[in-house]
Structure formats: structure tokens, C-alpha cells
Image (cartoon, rainbow, N blue to C red; front, side, top):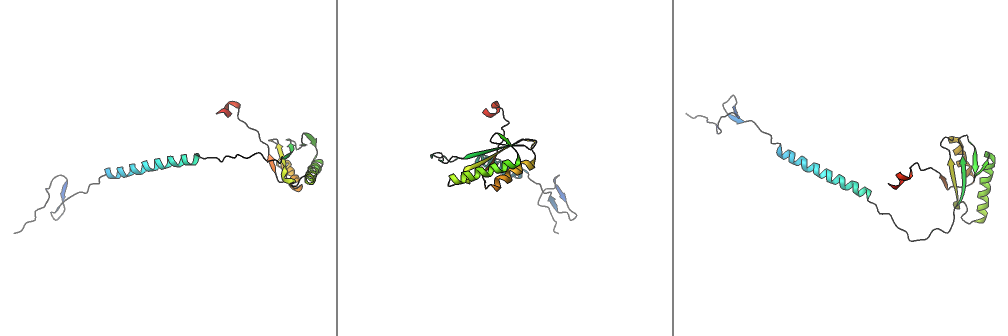
Length: 164
């Protein structure tokens, strides 16, 4: 009579099912999986480092030209915390500020070809000045046709911090 003999030895790692067939439990080898993960991790670290350096290294253009011949005339408007205005160092009220800004814009328009682009309105507002007071100066400049508006700020860094 024919007998079934298992091909593999029955040892501790082998077990038999109900039919008497021996099989070995599958074993998961983690070493190739860990190798693949390490390669992916190294690739991500290297590519991230290159991306950071690429974003930071910039080359600014250089210019060998001369300064523009047209000088920009500045209208300096200071706004205090209580809503008072000063035009080029002289304290003025709201109505006369509007008149003087309009008058300066008209005089400059008569003398220059590119009139309103050569006037810069510099607004120096107190940190506690109301938003409405600053908006009034912007509106006055807009009504006079002045579009070159700059806000003056203060640098809070000390001289030792600037050297770094």
C-alpha cells in the first residue's frame, strides 16, 4: 500500500494539519523592508536639504546706471495720537491741510511735465493715532491726484543687533 510521507522533516518549526501534511509557518523577513525605508529616508533628507539651499541662494541683479535725474519732492505729513496734523513740520488743521496738499500738487503740475509722479507723500503716524486720521490723509492725497504714498516706520533694532 502507498503511504504518504512528508517531504520535510517534522520538527518544532513544522506542524501538521488534520490530513497529516506537514507545512512550515511563513516567516516575514524585515531586513529588506528596513533597508528600503532607510533608502527612502536618506533620499528625503538629502532632497529637503537641497531645496532649502536652493530657496536661499539668490543672485540679485546689478546695475551700472546712474541715479534718475528727476528728484522726488516729498510732502511730509505727521499725524499725532490725538489726531492733529503737521505738514512739513508746521502744525495745521484738517481744512488747511487739504488746501495745502492740493496747492502743492497744482504748483508742481504747472512746473513739471511728469507732475504728480514726482511728489511723494510721506505719512508719519503715531502708533496710537486713530485709523480715521490716517485715512483722511490718504483721502486728501487721493483727491489731489497724488498716488506715490509712503508710510514712515521706525527700526526697533539696536546697533548691536544690526551688525549681526
